[in-house]
Image (cartoon, rainbow, N blue to C red; front, top):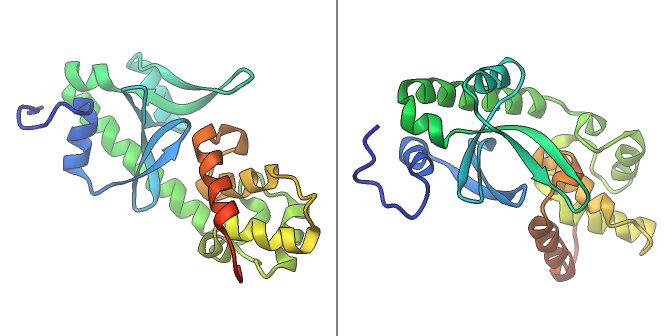
Length: 205
């Protein structure tokens, strides 16, 4: 693949993808998540690029000896369905292009499938009890939760349930919106949410 015109500030594979797709970024897993149409398909972590797997696609990555990403938590680590692609980008460009297209398509399909879900309890981290709590503050479906956002939703709940509301509920709400288990949220994301919470004044409705 022609990378001569790409600046070396990021891994070549990431710069190639940025030129190929219109993407947005967001902090994920202690690194940077790359999204197309709100569907995350690429993770940049510690200078390495990881493409999203899932179902049969993960087996294709493993078949190419792509290292699976392990997110290190404060206690232990969690393996997620993202696979290192820097080497295959350099050594097998046609195979990389094939996996890239499959990864983007899989991410879009996953996003489409889950955005059709209207029941809050079907989102990651949100069991029936949390769904009922959200109902009390006027958040009755996934679309409303996405529109309101995790911080404002938590602020509403805090007004109803008091100062003793566990901060982990904020992590769960953010994880639900990001389609990940709340324990996978990075420390950076949690600090950002706390800063937003501290600055969140006025009517949250």
